Image (cartoon, rainbow, N blue to C red; front, side, top):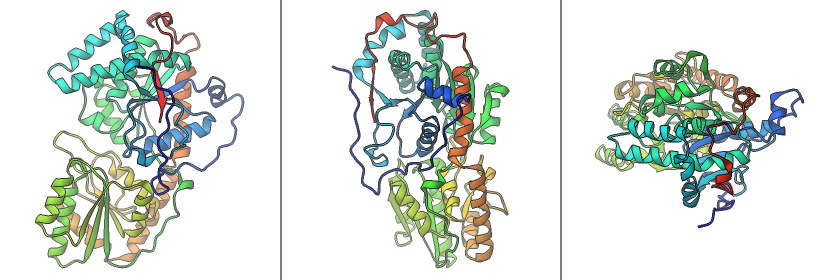
Length: 466
């Protein structure tokens, strides 16, 4: 089997294309680290579970902003093949610099996994950490194989630092690359990877040169789980305000509830359906739309049918980003009824809250995790106790009672997201950190003594595509 060359996804329809940043950045000065990054073709790369991903548009926005600032496209190593072609246009800017694993490439990477003492030690450590969990163990070993196959490509690109999005398998790949290939690494931790899937979390955090997270609540949790205080920084996700519609603050008519997210336990959509039953029982007129797909789709459909709410609640499945923003303008309130899932998973700050606020849409959310960092009562929205459908119904009904107060909070929320959640401005600070890590070790060489000798490989083992 030959190593796959660059591939391009099929062009998406205009309604399915993920909005690309339109803001232009001025050239940077010759003395800045950004200019140096351009000269060495971006000395860092990203590692993700799957890129692009329909439910991780925040990573796409971050990479788009960073690539525009640099003037070059950052290399991206995706541990899994691209699955959802609906969110990316055929000519998106990462099509030639996103690398996906191939079977032949992984086979050729075996010597990197077995040919050095650091690699064998890492393999033994991972095997012990995931013992007793066959599925997780197989994913971890596959991740090490893929990471081993990345080394020649990283070397050919002169990458000195890798940034992993998620502290699960992407961070495990970065952990292996630091021990075997001598590159430094950083990791962005979100929620699932902090509170639920925590195998080797302390080891990955303590070995990281930089730990990034998007909320203060996550930062505190990471410090409790082994991160060094000086290595954790908060870098918030954000929106590209140049590529989204202007806000709409005047919303009249009946109560129109919108919820957006994966149909998984932590989103709490079952509680929203229960709250809708309570609203109907109280005689409150409303309609509700839920956008998103996931493993609980059938369960939620049965719940709606069991309450005979088919006329009021629509489960619309996955929608394009453009359709989601159209729904923000249809609705009179966004509801984010997050809960802590049985496995410990939870939201940080759901990106749909930021998107809704950017459109002038009032927000009701759970008083959970980092959500109060953006939904402030009584300034920018309403909070309800997680898992309490009666309180949720009270908040939903209350939104319609005082239109002037609702608009006041919506305007304050819009000002907040414009001030603190601009993706391009936040990307500048993150980029300073990443470039600083990539160029802060002038005495080091990517070809450290622990790296497998390049003579063992003839060509890069990752295939580019996307």
